[in-house]
Image (cartoon, one colour):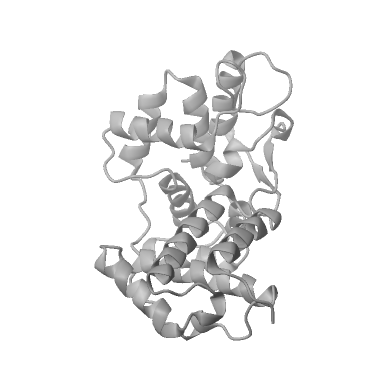
Length: 286
């Protein structure tokens, strides 16, 4: 078994995440969590990975709880810790994994926030005079794609009646249909888009990529203008799912459209859509 200091192991872990093509958000989140763990362990005078015990990790999570972190956040930190320890084991820095002996805290997931028809109409109205943001909001509502997938779209991904969704952050590529609302919103946007034949679909006035964080900020601004309380960008995807379940879209087809790896991920929405119609494969527009 090789030996390594905790601080050095953390740096190698970050490089491992990069080489494994983890998403930027994952690298930042895991990096912060493991940095907190390493800093706590240094307070305990633990400098090498082999010195860390289950009790040390329990004490770290207890400290995070005392600092005001929610059970959900603490559970995420444990997941980060376990990913770190899987890396250490693969790299032959440890033989036993103490993180596997630590239990996750109990917590209940909040139900998905699903926009009402009044809310998503108000959101459309708020963005009506901004063709780029109107198209972004309409695509998220009408296709259910993720915001990262939307930001990654290229001009070549827009087909006559569909979108090619490239592989993004370990999500497989797929094709999703474009209904009349989505096609009309795209048509309006492309009329005013900077005249660049190729490259990203959604760009700034200078022709640069419209980044995820800026898209998110812009959508949140329109939530405020439309006076929609407590909504986040991913709630547009939740709304897409709920709408099509209510209209009886096949669970299997819906799962494929969403890019879910497991049907069970789609099925969990059934608890929040009690008025689901008889299953069919007809697509209904929002």
